[in-house]
Image (cartoon, rainbow over all chains, first blue to last red):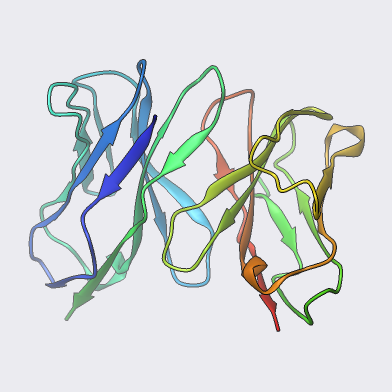
Length: 112
Length: 112
């Protein structure tokens, strides 16, 4: 079946540190891949997406590359800020069904 | 442009009581989704509507959950009777066809 696995959290970093949150997936077919972010008390917001292999999604300094050979979509940011503290969800989806399958989420805490 | 609107934001009820959640999607979005997010987990799809038709309700526990989307705009999700295990955040999302999904802030339900 289709599934998404994310690295366990929480991830605690100091401000300006480099961030990597690992995400791997299992899927039949050719899904699109997404990163959503959930700030405290808010709904999920789309952070970035990639629709095919080797595509790179980027937004607000975050980026992730769709790696079909390793079935991965790791999230990276070169210099995190305190305001990046949130829960990050990796997800896969198929355009024909519209269904999103989420990972369990990774909490990021950035300390000043 | 207004985002997805949900109400109420919080609800506390006794077990065996009924509860209803309301969602108003982004204007023009014909696809509407209800998700349930348990604590520390990613959202899981309950039901998806294309206009007023429920096209995927395979994950909806139909013995106690029901949903409707009259006129293909607003939607209501109901639980009757509620059980302790229904405590979760209920998220509504919408999209134009099966493009990017935009999420509302969610309704946090606590069943006592």
